[in-house]
Each structure stands twice: as structure tokens, then as C-alpha cells.
Image 1 (cartoon, helix red, strand yellow):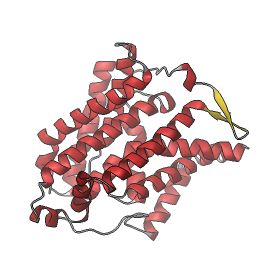
Image 2 (cartoon, rainbow, N blue to C red):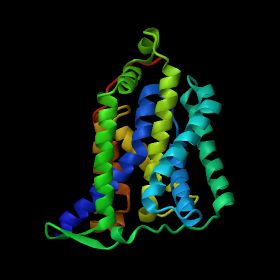
Image 3 (cartoon, helix red, strand yellow):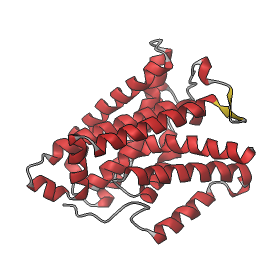
Image 4 (cartoon, helix red, strand yellow):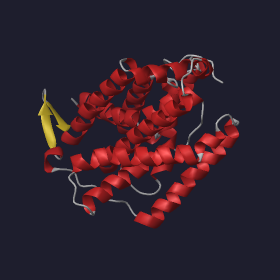
Length: 289
């Protein structure tokens, strides 16, 4: 029973990591832009949700879509005003730029909301435990699994079954060829960046009560998001999902069964996977401008 409960907790954590990381996976696969500031958008979504509930009195379920919309708009503004001017630059320049944005976001959040942890109140029906198939499972983690699975299906349908999704796939496969066919790749990327940023904000809002929310949030989870993107493969939805679930299960299980090892196990697994498939589990080499 303990093994199954640990497995479930890892899956719930994995879905949370997937929502936080999938936008970065798609945008990096499309533009090869190293955006380390993506995890700051997760933090912003958490603070938007906390503010909406504490200051404006919105219920938890209403604060989640607000976090998505607010973070999407903010990420679009950042992409249009700052990031687009650095497309095509070398990786080091992009890393220095976006890590600088991370530090700016941390100091800005500490100034606006304060340096302390922000408590997050969830509805009573999401607290406590629920018996499912003889297992006592946390209701909030059940909520994360249900929402994560629904979002995975929605993202897959959006990319595989819509015209805009076809544009995204074309840009991921070969951005130069897509532009040569008359596709406005700048608009596609801007909208994709906004949606990915919104998903990051939604993930941050959902994670606040489980992972904690304070200005150092980006520093704690930047590595996790990058591992998910690298191991899953840039630009692939199911690769990102597989990597997120694997990381979530490995992290929860290692901390429960071998706490002395800390987080070293997930890094060893990451190294092994990257040596085996440098492009990621389901990633593939693509041609980019």
C-alpha cells in the first residue's frame, strides 16, 4: 500500500511539473531560445492566485484561470519587448539575459509581496484524504492528477487537431521552411510563448499550496523544469509528460526510501538518459534557422 501511495504522489507531482514545463519545451523546440526565466512565470502565477484569493476574495477555482490569463499577457509583453531582440544570438547570451531576468523577478517579487512564504488556502473539499481502491489518497493530489490529465489531453488536441497546432508543428519541425511557405513565424511563436507562459503560471498557481511560494521559488525549481525539458526532448508533448512523470516518481520515491541520498538519484538518472539519447526520450534532431 505504501508503494502504491508513493507512486500516486509521484504521479501527481509529475503532472504538476509537466504543466510548469510543457510551454518551455514547445518554445525551445520551436526557436531554440534558452529561456531560464520560464520558471519565474510559474512564480508569478502563484502570486497572482494568492493575491486574487486573499485581497480580492476570489475562490480558488476562479483564481486559477486568472493566473493563466495574467501570466500569458505578461509573458507576451516580455517576449515582444525584450526576448525577441535576442533570437539568433548565442546560447551564452541567452542564458545570461534570462538568468538576469530570474534575479530581477526574485527581487521584484520580494519587494512587492515580501520575502516570506505566502500561505495558500484551498477549498475544504480539496483538503484531507479520500479512499480510492483501498488507498488513502490526498484529495489535492487527486485534483492535480485530474487537472493534469485534462490539460495534457487539451494540449495534445490543440497541437494535433487544430490549424494553429499545425502551424506550431511546422515551426518546430523546420522554422525556415515554414517561413518560406508564407507562415508568419514571429506571430506563431509570440502566441505560443504566451500560451506556454500561461500554462507556467497555472502550474505555479496549482503548486503554491503543495510546494510553497516565496521569492526563491525559481531557484528551487529551475533545475527540475530544465531536466523535464532536456530528458523529454524539446518540442514534444508526450516526451515532456514522460520525463515529468518519471522525475516526479523518482524524486518522491528517493526522498521517501533513501532520504540520505537527497536528490542525487534524479541527477544520476538524468545523466544516464542524456548519454543514451542526447536529444531526449522522444526528441528528434530538427533543422532550425
